[in-house]
Length: 126
Image 1 (cartoon, one colour):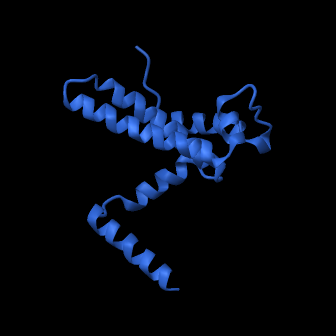
Image 2: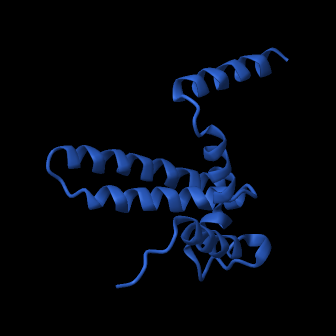
Image 3: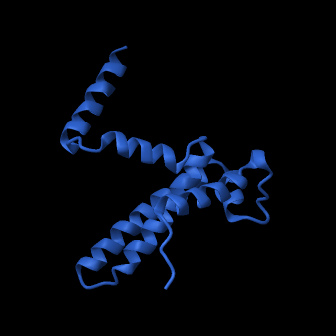
């Protein structure tokens, strides 16, 4: 029986592959789906994120009515993947997201949302 790799290891390896496909690193749009998405620019991968988010919702709704729950996993994997392409484009990584989640740990979601709204209001007034 093989061990399941840690989430961090898996995301780090995938992030490294995605980063290697960046145009600045010589990613070839003729040879790589990721390089092609990045070459097309943000509209291409942002559209994919929207599509995949919708597919997650549809898979979850289907699962509520007896559909295959594995489809949720498959669609979330697609959503995470395309989100990681966006992170790489903007010079960010899954570790940045993990750090933000760690920062929020132990904070009420309601409090966190209220704090972000207050910060947004302050920024708009400046």
